[in-house]
Image (cartoon, rainbow, N blue to C red; front, side, top):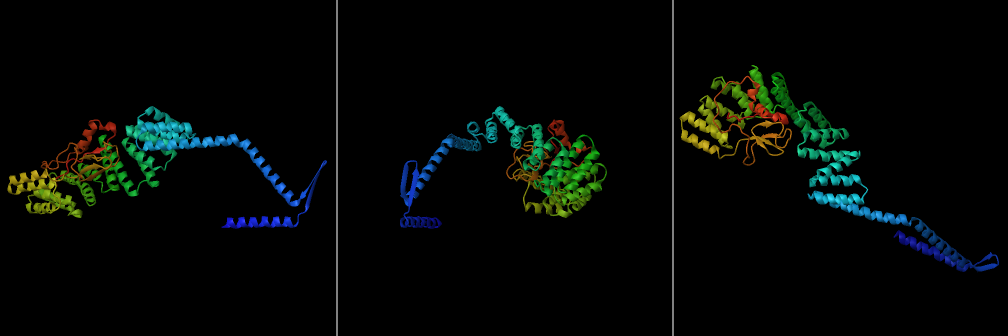
Amino acid sequence: MIRLIGFLFLVAVLAVISVWFVDHPGHVTLQWMDYRIETTTAVAAVLLLVVIAVSALFYRFWRWLRRGPQALSEIWQGGKRKRGLKALSRGYAALASGDGRMALHRAKEAAGLLNEPALTNLLAAQAAQLAGNEAEADARYAALRADPLTELAALRGMLARALRNGDRDEALRLARRARELKPDAAWVSAVLLEVLPQKQAWDEAEAALNDAVRHGHQTREKATHMRAVLRFSQALDAAARGDDKKARSLAVEAHRLDRGFAPAAAFAARTWGEEGSPKKAFAILKSTWAVSPHPELVRVFGDLTANDPPYSVLKRLQELVADRRYDRESRLAIAARAIDANDWELARTELKALADGRVSPRVCELYATLEEGESGDRDTAREWRRKAQAVPPEPSWHCRACGRTSKSWRAICPSCGSFDSTDWRAPETAPAAIEPGPSSSAPRPARRRLPISLVDATDDLYRDLAEGEAADAETTYNRGEPASG
C-alpha cells in the first residue's frame, strides 16, 4: 500500500513538472566555438537526463570490468563450498549408519572442497576408527590435537577408543589432559570416576567425585554412597596387605557414610567380632538392618553367635530385626533360628506368612528342614526340595551396566569395568551362569566359630587375588551364600 502511494505521488510530481514546462517553454542557447545550439527548456532537461543515464551505465560497466574476475571467483568458490558441505553432510550420514568406508571417502572429498580442517578431520577420524583403519584415525586425531580449538574433541574420540580397547592407562592419561582443558565437562568426570577406581587411585577418585558434585554431575546422595564404596574398596586393599586395623577403620567409615551399604556393614561387623567387640558388631548389624535387610548380615550374625545356645540366638536375632520385623528377610532369619531352637510353631508361622507371598528356594528349603526336624517326614521334605528347583531364584548381585550376575559384590564389574554398578535384586528372567558359590537351597552348614583371620572371613576375595585378579585391580568382596536365616 505504501509503495502504491509513493508511485502515485511520483507520477503526480512528474505530471506537474511536465505541465509547468509546457506552460513555460523558455529557451536554452548553447554557444561552443562556431557552433550555436538553441532549444526549449523541456528538450534540454530531457537531454540532460539522457546524459546522466548514459554516464551511469558507463560507470556500472567500468566497475564490472574491475570486479568481474573476483565475482566469477566468488561464484566458483560458493559452488565449491556448497559441494563440500554436501559431501560433509553425506559423510556424517554414512557415519551414523555405520558405513565407515563411505564416511571416510566423503570426508576426503569434503577436505578437497572445503578449507575447514576441523570439520573434515573430525569426520575422517571417526570414520577411520569405524572402518578399523587405526593408522588413519591416529593421523587425523594428531592433526586435531595440534589445534587448540579441536584438541578437546580429539581427546574425547581417543578416550572412547582407549576405553573400547581396554587400555586403562591411556584412557586415564587422556582423561587427565581433558580435565585440564575443561574441568566442568560431564563426560570427563564420568571417565575419571570409571577409570581411577580401576587403577586403585582412591584419593584422586575421591577428588574427581568432589569435582563432579561441585559441577552438578552427581547428586550429593549418590556421591555419599560412592564415597562409602571407595572407603570400603580401600578397606579390602588394606585387608589384603594384612593391615587389619586400617581395614576395620575404613570399613566402619564406609558404614558411617552409608548405613544401607550391606557389604561394608557385614565386613565391619565381622572385624569387630574378631577383635572381641560383639556389642559394636551387633550395633552395626542392627543399624544396617533397619535400613537395608540383607542375608549377609544374618550370616555374619550367625558366625558371631556360633557357640551360643540356639534359643538365646533366636532371642538375640529378634532384637536385631525388630525395626523391620515383618520384612521378608526378617521372617526368613527368624524361621531358620526357630528351627534351630526346635520352636516349630514359630517357624511354621513365619514360613506360612512367607509362602502366602512369594515362594523362593530358601522358603522351600526351610520348609523341608522343618518337616524333617519336627516329624521326620522325609517324603514331604523331598517334595519341598524338588519344588525349590522350580520356583524363581533368589536375589543376587547384578551389574546395571552389562547385566552380569554374581553372588559376590564387586566394586568394579569384571565384565564391563563399571564402577559401583552392582545392585542386589531378584533376576527378571532365568539367570545366566552364576559364578561358583554355595547353593542358596542347600542345607545350612554346621555352626562354626568365627574365624580370627580376615583372610578367612573374606575367603573368596583373597582366592580371586591369588588367582591374579589383583593385577587387574578388581576389588571384590565375597558375599557367599545368602544365608537361609
